[in-house]
Structure formats: structure tokens, C-alpha cells
Image 1 (cartoon, rainbow, N blue to C red):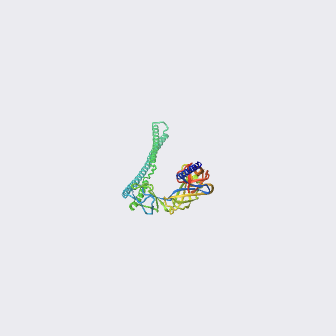
Image 2 (cartoon, rainbow, N blue to C red):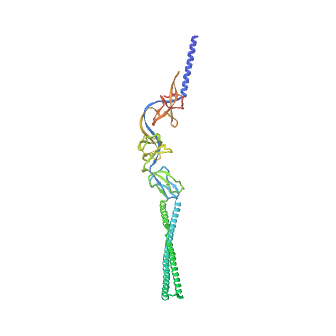
Image 3 (tube, rainbow, N blue to C red):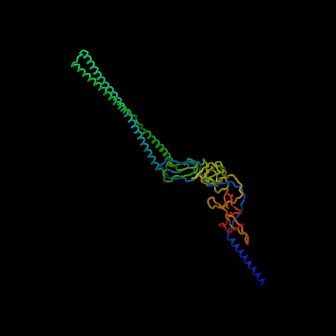
Length: 436
């Protein structure tokens, strides 16, 4: 009986252990397999990474006369073009209409200029004639009125002389004496009236002369019309050149077509039709980064740049730095590049490295997770000993990021081991197993 009990217990515990083993095997097949790394001391530099697009520093605007109709475009945006290459064609039918209209307008302006000059000359002659006549009338009034005054004065003098001679010979009162006195009075009154008439006539004649001698008002109508004619003539000469080129407009420079600002059927304006990046002017890349992440950035700093996806970095220098954004919380960084090394429109990666510093706690960059803005965490592991061995449990650690580069990040708040990668989704409390 005792032996049976012992055999039963052996079978029972073997069954339990076997079930546990099978359970662990099944669990290991279903739980996540993770890659584990350790917190290590490392030297990190203040590093900023960003991306930008290569653009040309010097652009040439292609401008033609306004009002012309685009008949065809011979290039596409981004295409490399050569000096003298056809860019677009103007409608010759519409061009011929514009040329004829300008020629007719210039002819009309010639007639208007001629008429304006003739009218201005006639106005000046009429004013001069009126002035001359007023002066002549004034002289005539002076002479006429002076003669009247002289006659009246002589008659007065003669009457007074006759009266004096008579009373000297006949002192007693008589009818003849009274008659002579009346004559003197009459002549005095006539003389006074002659003086008054002379004064009034001279005054009126002076007014006539003043009115006739008004300043001739400025009339620049002919000159204004000549300016308009000159503008039309210059535009006509440009259109005739386009007509001579059979409506084809060519590139003034070697370069890359940066912008096409018209389409077939549209009309040109005073704005550019196209913009060409001049290859000889070099290129630049503009990157935007948060100001608080790059307080060490300034003009002249070394930067490393490379084409996106390529291997190897090239050293360049920051040429311009300015604050942008509504609160000026972003830095716009410009770096000059050679268009022989970097193609226009290509994506360029940039890295700026500041001063290096030793950090006691750093982890691989792949272990860091962001929960929300400026809030980070990592997953660590807690090793629990069980009857069948060591069990790994996921633990979540909130951390503060001190510095980072492309490979490692310096943090505060991590204890022990961290999970760098997992073959499936994990969370705090998950059971995991370490990969081989």
C-alpha cells in the first residue's frame, strides 16, 4: 500500500511539472520577444538634425511685354535649360494685331501733338495781340485826354487874362465886368472837368493794359503727348523684335527653370512669365528648427549636410540665421551649397553638432518613447523568480531627456535594463521574453 502511495505521488508531481513546462512553452510562443540594452555612460554632443530643399540663390525673371497671348510652352518646371533655348511662343496673330494698334496709336499721337502745339502757339499770339492793342489804346487815351486838358487850360488862361485887363482899365462895376467874370468861372469848370476826365480815362486804360498782360498759363499738353508717344514707340520696337523672332522667347541664361507663372492661352502681364535659377549664383538650403533646441547655433557654425538617402556628410558653414514664426520661436538656418554637388529641388539632411559632454545615463535612441509634447518614457524589465525560472515583466519609467544624437539619448529616471525593440505590442505589466 505504501508503495502505491509513493508511485501515485510520483505520477502526480510529474504531471504537474509537465503541465507547467507545457504551459511555459506555450506562453513563450505567445508572449513578445524583446531586445534588451543596459544604461551606459557615454559622451554626447548637442546635435540638431533637420531637412531642407535645395534652391537657387540667384533667380532671373523672364519678363516680356504685357498683353501678349501665350500660344505654347516649350519647357517644364524643374528642367535644366541653356542660354538661347526656346521657352515659350507668343501668338503671332494676336501680336500682329497689337503691332498694328500701336502703329495707329502713334500716328494719332503725332496729329495730337501737332494740334496741341498749334493751339498753344495761337493762344500765345492772341494774348500778345490783345496786350499790344491795350498798350496802343492807353497811349491814345493819354494823348487825347492831355490835349483836352491843354485846350481847357489855355481857354481858362485867356479868359482870366481878358478879365484882368478889363478891370485894370475899368475898376468900376459894369455889365461887361460881370460877363467876363462868368466866362472865367465857366472856363474854370471846364478845366476841372477835363482833369477829372483825364484821370478816369487813364485809370480805365491802365486796367485794360493789366488785363491784357495776364501771365500765360502753363500748357504741357504737347510734352505729355510726346512722352506717351515715346512709350508706345519703345513698346512697338520690342514687339517688332518678338515678331522678328517669329514669336519665340528664349532663355537669357543657363540654369534651371524654377517657376512657370503662365499657361497656354493666358496673357502676359507686367509680372514675370518664368523664373530661372542661375547656376553660376550657387544654391542654398534653408532648414527650420526650434530655437530652444539650438541655442548654440550662429552664423559661421560648422554643419554637416548630405543628400537624403546618401552615405557620407559634407562640411559646410551657416550663412544666415533669423528668427521666424508668430512668437519667433523657430530658427531659419541657411547654408550655401554648390549646385554641382547638390541638385536643385533635392532634399538635404543637416546635422549641427555643438559641445560634447559626458552623461552617466544614456540609452539607445530606439528605447525612447514620447507620450506627449516634452513628455517621454522608456520600457524597462523587472526580473521575477518563479518555480520554473525567471519571468520578465515590463515596467514603464517616465524620463527626462537631457541630450541626444542620432544613436543615443541621455536621460534621467531609468533604472537598470531597457527594452530597445519588440516583435509585438507591449505595455506596462506585459510578460516578455528576451531574444537570443
